[in-house]
Amino acid sequence: MSSNVFVELKTPITGTYKQPTGLFINNEFVEGVDKKTFEVINPATEEVICSVHEATEKDVDIAVAAARKAFEGVWRDVTPQQRGIYLLKLADLLEKNLDLLAAVESLDNGKSITMARGDVGAVVGTIRYYGGWADKIEGKTIDISPDSFHYTRQEPLGVCGQIIPWNFPLLMLAWKVGPALATGNTIVMKTAEQTPLSALVFAQFVKEAGFPPGVLNIISGFGRIAGAAIASHMDIDKVAFTGSTMVGRQIMKAAAESNLKKVTLELGGKSPNIIFNDADIDQAIDWVNFGIYFNHGQTCCAGSRVYVQEGIYDKFVTAFKQRAQQNKVGDPFHDETFQGPQVSQLQYDRIMGYIKAGKEEGATVETGGERHGDKGYFIQPTIFTNVRHDMKIMKEEIFGPVCAVAKFSTEEEVIKLGNDSNYGLAAAVHTKDLNTAIRVSNHLRAGTVWVNTYNALHHQLPFGGYKESGIGRELGEAALANYTQCKSVSIKLN
Image (tube, rainbow, N blue to C red; front, side, top):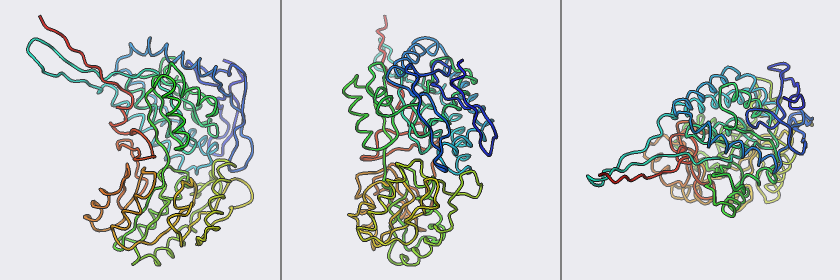
C-alpha cells in the first residue's frame, strides 16, 4: 500500500490520527490513474486540511469493474445471513470509533461536534438496522393451477452507483449503502468533493468488518467528472443521488440516455412549518428554531417557510427572535456550539446572496442577516418577516440559516400556502388539536409531516419527497425496494 494515500492529521477530540486520502477500490486505498489530487478546506478556518486523490472517468471504470467482479463472483455466493453479519460487525466498528468519525466529520464539514456525534450514532443505527434486514428479503409462492408451481424472487439489481452530498456525509453514506448491501448489491460510491474525509475513514472499517474486495468502493471526485461518469456508465445498473433538484435532473437524463439504469433521487425542499393559535408556543419556538438552524440550515427538509396564525403572530415573532439569538455560533469543536460555518465559500456567497435579495425585495430582517466573525464561513441565524409569497426567499431553497415568517388566518389558507411550492419533501404542524393535526397533515403534499416536532428522522421511517423533491424512498423497509427487482418463476409440473 502506497504511503501517498495516507496523511497524519489532528483534531481537538482525537489528537493525531491517520487519514486515508486515496481512492478505496477493491478494499485498498490507491492513487488515481492520473495521480491528480484536490484540496480539502476547513470551513471554520478557511485553511487547507489536506489533499485527496481525485477520481476521473478512468478510476470510475476501474471501480465499476471491481464491483462487477465482486457481484458476479464472491458476493453472489455470500448467504443473506452472512451479509447481515458483515453489516452488524461494521456497525459495531463504527460505534467503537464514534469519536474519531465525529471529529473528522466536524473537521471536514464544520458541523458542531455534538451534532456530528448524533450523526454517527444514527449511522450506526442505520447500518445495524439493515444488517437485520439482510436475511428477510423474501419472495412468495402464487397458487395458479394444480399442474404448475409459481414463485417470485426479490433479486439484487447489480452494481449501484451512489452519489452523496456534503451536508451529512456519513449519514447519507449509511442511508445508501445499508439497503444496497443488505439486498446483495455492490457499490461505487462518490462522495462530495467538499467533504471526502469521513467516508475514507469509514472505508477502513469496511475492510475490517470482512466485506470481500470490490463490494463497496468509495471514491473522491467532482460531480462534473466522476459523478457524470457514474450516471452515464453502461455497466452500472442503478444510480442513487442525493443533492439539488437541478443536478438530479442531469442524473436522470444521463441515466436515460445511457443504459436506462434505475434511478432514485432525494432532492431539494422548501418545507412549511405551520404554527396554529392553540400551539404550545414555547415548545413550537424550540422546534421551529431546530427545524431551520439544525446543521446550519444545510438540510434538505429545513423548515424555512414558517407560517404563524394571526392570533399569536406578534408574540411568536418576538419570542422566536430571542430564541434564535441564543444559538451559539462558533468553533465546531466547542461542546456548546450549536451552529458552525457553512460548508464552503461558494455556499456562503450563495446564502448571503439570498439575504441580500430578501432585503432588496422589502422583507424585514428581524435578526441576523450578516456575517458572523471575520474568519470562516459563518453566517448569523437570520429571520425575515413582512414577506410576500413571490419573494425569492419564500420560493427558492436557500440551504442556510435563513427563514421567513409569514402570517395566516385560516386552516384552508395555510394548506394552500404550504402546498404552493415545486417541492414536497417535508412539513410540520404545531397544534394541540389532534383533529387539526391529522386533517392538515393529510392535506399537505409532502413525503414527511411532523406534528409538534421537527427533524424527527429515524432509520425505521421512510423518507423522501413529493413533486420535485425526488423519486423513491430512503430508510425503513421502503428503501429495500430501491435495490431489488422482482423475478417471477413458473414451473410446469408433470
